Amino acid sequence: MIIHVVKQGETIYSIAEYYDKSVERLILENGIDNPNNLVIGETLVILYPEIEHTVEDGDSLASIAESYNTTIIDLLRNNPYLSNRKNIFPGEVIVIKYRGDKIKQIATKGIVYPFVSMDTLIKTLPFLTYLTVYSYFYTNQGEILGNDDMEIIQTAKLYGVAPLMMLTTYSTSQAEEIEVIHNILANEEYQDSLINNIVLTLSRKGYYGVDFNTPYIKPDDRPLYVDFIRKLSSQLRARGYMFVISISLSVFELLLNIKYPDLQYSELGVLADSVIIISYEFGFSFGIAPTVASFDTIRNLVEYMVGHISSDKIDFGISTIGYIWSLPYIDGVTRGQSLSYDSVIDLAREVAAEIQYDDVTKASYFQFYSQNEYIVRFRDARGINAILSIVPTFDFDGVALWNVMFFYNQLWLVLNSQFEIVKIASTSSQESSTS
Image 1 (tube, rainbow, N blue to C red):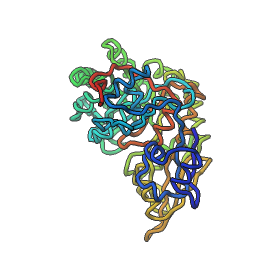
Image 2 (cartoon, one colour):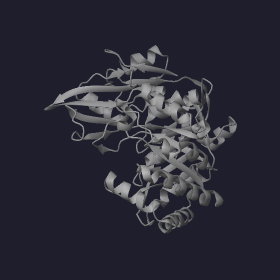
Image 3 (spheres, one colour):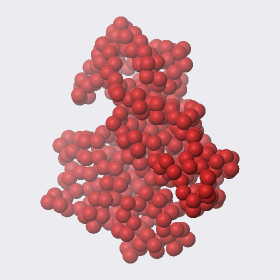
Image 4 (cartoon, helix red, strand yellow):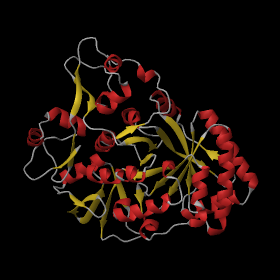
C-alpha cells in the first residue's frame, strides 16, 4: 500500500501514469467524485492487484468466487462499488486479491444510527464483524426506549454481521446522565428491571449482544457500578449473549491524563467479552475533537489500559468524523460541526484550500476565511494508517468505528489491505449470485 499526497500541478492522469495504474481503477478504489479537480494535499491510496478476473458471459459473483476459492464478501471488499449493483457485465475487471500479506485477523465494530442510508449500510457490511445500532436508552427506573431498527438488524445478518444493541442513559445533559445512572445503581429493583428489559429486547429484536456505554460515574457510585456490571454480565452470559463495554473518554480527559482507576478496569475487562476504548465528540459539540490530541497522548492511554485489560479483549476506537470550527476557539462556546471525509474534501476544493498534515496528532487540517476564519481537522489515509498501527503493536482484537454513517473509501482501503476481517455469523441471501 502506498499513500500518495497530491501536489501542485498533479492530475488524476499524471498520478495514475506515475504509479502505472488505470485512471478508472484509481477513481473507483478511492471513491473520487471530482477526479478532474483534485485538492492539493489530499491523499490517494495506491494498491496493486495480484489476481484479477475479466467478467465473461454467464459469470456471477458466486461463480467467480467459487472459481478462485474465495467468497462473495471478499469480492465486495476488494470491489465495493459492486455492492449496490444487481448485475456485472462482460469486460469488467474485478480484483480477486491485492498484493501484500495481511498483518493479522481483527474484528471490526461499526456504529450507526437507525436512520443510516441502506445503500451506505449495504456497501459497508462486507467490512464489518459487528454492527452496533446507536442507541437504546434506559431511564432512571430501568425502562428501555428503543428504535425502529428491524431492517438494519435483518440486513446485517444477511451479510454475516452480528448486530449489537448499544445502551446509553436517557438524558439531555451530563448532569442528568450522572443522575440516571446513580438512580439505577442505588436501587436493586431498578437494576433488575433494566436487566430484564435488556434481555427481552435482545430476544425480541434478534440482537447478538449488547454494547453498554459507560457514562461518567460519580466516585461514590463506582464500586456499585462494578457490582452492577458483574450482575449484568452474569445474566447475559447465562443466556449466550455477547457483552461489550464501551469506555468513552472525552478529549478533555484524554489531554489532562484523567483516568478513573476506582472503576476497576481489570475487573471490567474480565466481565466483558470485549472492551471498546474510544474518544469522540458528537456531531454538533462544544467539545474538542479527537484530532487535537497528540498521537503520544493516545498511545499513553492505550498503554495504561493494556496494563489493566487483556489486549485480546480490547477494541481500539477510531473516529471517522472531521470537524469544522470558527476561530478563535473558545472552550464551552465555540460549536464544532461534524463533516464526512467527502464533505471535507469538497469544502477544501470550494475554498481553494491546501490540506496540511500535523505529524504530532496524525491529523490533517486546513484554514480558510469566509466572513470569519475557520479551521477544519480530520483524518485522511495518513492518519487512519497511523491510528491502525496501534492494533498490531498492542495485539488488539479489533477496532470500533465511530461512525459508519457514510462510506469512507480510504478507511476501508487502508484497513482491508492490512487486516483480515473476521466474520462470526453466517451469510445467507447475499451469497446468491450477482449476474
